[in-house]
Image 1 (cartoon, rainbow, N blue to C red):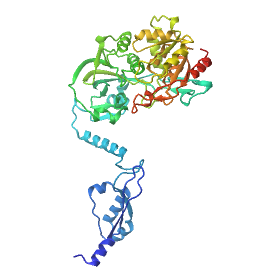
Image 2: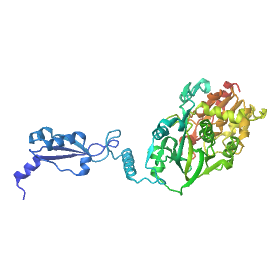
Image 3: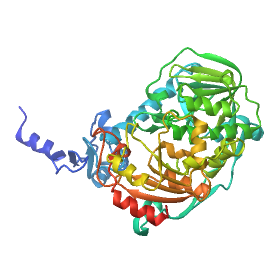
Image 4: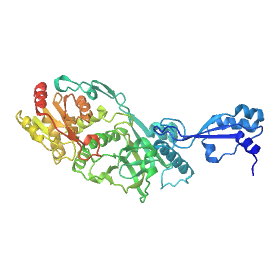
Length: 489
């Protein structure tokens, strides 16, 4: 049996005091250890505990190993080892939600680094920018494989006027500068799945031209090529192909503004394109617009989520909107391209029957006007005609908006057609009070339209867990009359 003297000596060498602090955020139980060692004493710790020791403790441990008992007594002291979650924002390897996610990504990187490169398999790394990849691979021939376009693009913004001249904070005057766009020629690249992830020949993802959607836009190490890899059979495309994919290509606005302007970038590259890789959404407006741009069906490779192919020469245009840009900040060159291709170069007859239009969303699944009967009655008194765009052919939509001189509409993708309006057209956009988006105010400024806004009263989401922009809402008919008077309509 251990004697009293031996027990006291043991307790003097090491005292461990445990305490349980108040939980706050991701704070967790901390273990405070005080070490009082005798000359030559060494503490044994598990490998897991050593990994959690702070840098200062490592230095003290080294001193204990290298020095005498005197240095042990001088360097011994109090330190903390995390036994659970750290406070949010603290440094180190916490076990909170963010900490676990970071640890998981680091683990995945280590696993990928040990993986034998399979030229047909899952990517083993990424390039943050296509520019870096091309410069690294081609060096002095960089300019033969990478071109930049539209330097100095900007949009001047004027206030959108609300009722009684009020201006919402999201709709104030300013200037927005665009980023340069680019095109890159990648020889031997792979394209994976419908959203068009681009995998370079060194089996690394080109992050800046590879976005995906998992409840929200994802890119980089969060991309499904690292987290949800599937390996469909690898096809081979032995010609030059241009990439025209986007995560929300099935939406009318995003098709017009995130996909079609990339055709302009492909043309500016000067590289003859034999095939165009496009998403298979099977929507009529996609077929109509591609035909009008000189891309008939026989020149398209329509892809879905089982697509996986290596292309001998892949021409990759940058996304129209940059990764760090505000969601509404589409460059002016994109609007100019749409107006030139579908308005200026086409014979679009203007009709007086569409001089004043109300764009209804009654057939949509979100962001509908709940008291639309009152709104329509108010507008009919002033000669407005109600239009439904869902089943209207593309060029007919162009004609309707080119003919309009006054437009009233709830916020929605159909207002992408403002790109085809005549300068000076008056636009009254109705918005749910919980979602004041400035996409179409921004677009109105690029075309030279007079933009007004009217916030709704009450709102309700079709489903509680849906995003804020889905809310249906009511509009005060009296306020609408006053805003029409103010706009001179």
